[in-house]
Image 1 (cartoon, rainbow, N blue to C red):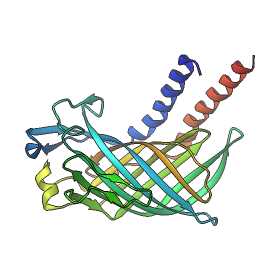
Image 2 (image 1 turned 60 degrees about the vertical axis):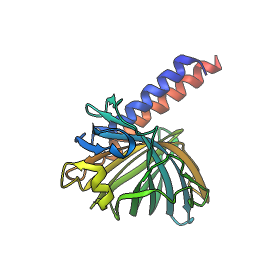
Image 3 (image 1 turned 45 degrees about the horizontal axis):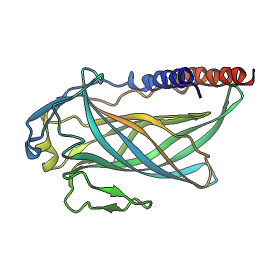
Image 4 (image 1 turned 180 degrees about the horizontal axis):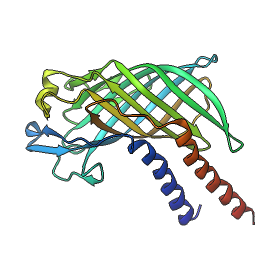
Length: 255
């Protein structure tokens, strides 16, 4: 694929992701990195990547587990990399996710699509103090004995996972986020800390059958109240633009 086609695809994918990001606020928070030879760091977004395994039951349901690693803080409404942080070098933050829900098939512009909605879900957030924890295929962990739990949520709110053609996007909101004592010593401001976490990003698409594993990118922001998840119709309009790009590229390739 030529560079300009790759660039256009990335640009449109970013536009799709922006439809999710625009639904969330970027509220400032402060972390204390004194345990890692640094001081206070202010940010409003955390970025990382994840691997996820989803098992479909063949009757419209699914269960999922995921391991996400966060290695970068952003500020200025999620637009500017925070350069004075040790995150991603001296230590990392990771999360273990699980969810159950339903999957629906759809068709957009003649292309197969699917919508995944979680009925229940939870996550736990940890700090990996020496940046060496990895996950096995069954999501058991290696080298996690010295990791520290920061907080967790057992309450999955509004959420959607959407895939059409080669494009997959998701937006999840978790409420009742509860910090541990160690978490309160790390996330030091505001106090009390935000109780809602909004997660969104993209993933490699997959067949909605049997057991599938996918990878993707994820961003996390904290909220005073649950963010509104974009309506499927809004996402569909943007997704159609991506489908149009694919059709145009195929026509040009055929000439």
